[in-house]
Image (tube, rainbow, N blue to C red):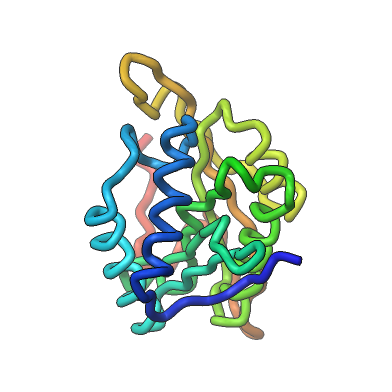
Length: 193
């Protein structure tokens, strides 16, 4: 049975296991933001930054282990400025190639959604490559909806792929006024036509 765990720190063993997941996913062609499999040093720097954000309350980093070994990872990060603190981006969701088909991706994503909701996040969003149909189907099964598509915006060597943005509302505090695109209020401007 896979075990979901939330990290605030990572010892050398955990770091090596996380590096193995990222390295092997990238080596197998995974669409997770790296052109080449990253070194252990690069993963350590990335992980240090993520775990600092976790300790500051601005992120969560989850791992899924099978037989005591990390086989999948994922994280959410809160928006950077004051007007985006209520939303978070889900990033770096990946399962080791040897663990595909075990449901670890869904375990991680659903765990991230639940964790974000508990942290008071109102909306989670994520981006994926247009050709990553399995991931899109997974996100849709959890309730994510596409809200934007930028054609051929992801570059992998000389190939280009659509960038798909998806979101999932988690709920708003009582008394929240949802204005959408209505005119008026702070930041409003008149049409010029």
